[in-house]
Amino acid sequence: MARGNKSFVGSIVALPTPFRGGIIDEGALAQDIDFHIENGTQGLVVGGSTGEAASINMAERHVLWSRAIESVNGRVPVLLGVGAPSTSATLELAHAAVTEGADGLLAVTPYYTVPDARGQVAHFSALAEAHPDTPILLYNVPGRTGCDMSADTAHELANKYENIVGIKECTRSIPRIQALMGNPNLAVYAGDDLALFDFMRHGAQGAITVTGNVLPAQTAELIGLAAINPNAKRVADLEAILAPVIAALSLGPNPTPVKAALEMARAYPGELRLPLLTAEPALRDRIRAAIAAHVELQTV
Image (cartoon, rainbow, N blue to C red; front, side):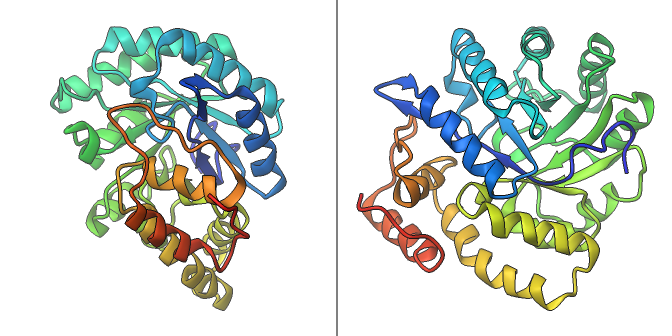
């Protein structure tokens, strides 16, 4: 287990941000948080990619973060997303997140600027040194950022800084997953649900999951059981339940599919911000079919 990281385990759900009429729906956020805690979710990410962070301004981040932390009230750890293209902007976000009371920071590799390995080390070193008492999870999602962090760079940072405790890895490469494992200073979390089963079989500490929004109890059970015995029959049963849902939620730009699913499942506000649009009818039909066996759907 990574240093200082005993609280970040199991099913950590990346929450979408509920909007109604263009404004953050604080009531829906609080209800969503209660739903997750009641259904076994073990941690939450607020203001990450699934939360449409790139479309939220600083004032809205304060509203989102403070309301989420107030609603959680210490029941599960909360990671706040602090990714930005520049180091200075990342540090500004991190300062605000720590001030709000984040249990940890989820920091994506700088998108658009796309630094090389030396620049990545310098960037995350600045963040780690600015907040030495706050756990930091690296976040590697090259499909969104164009900036890929190698396993060697992740290990270098985790070995250098006690507060860099893990990585959310959003690639599906088995060699990459294997290369990240085995360092007691670096916890590894599945960041792409399409590779969730592979990560857990190779020893991941947990997952930062989108599917957990829709089926939180099943997702948490699968991750917990797979960490103990990935070959158990119940793990295979849960894989069979989750696989079609994971596939359906991967058919459009995140969080378009998951917001459609939540709107169907529990009348969650399905509104998104441009340039994202709500799911088209054909995609909604695919999502509805995938979740109907497990969720009593609303009429939407």
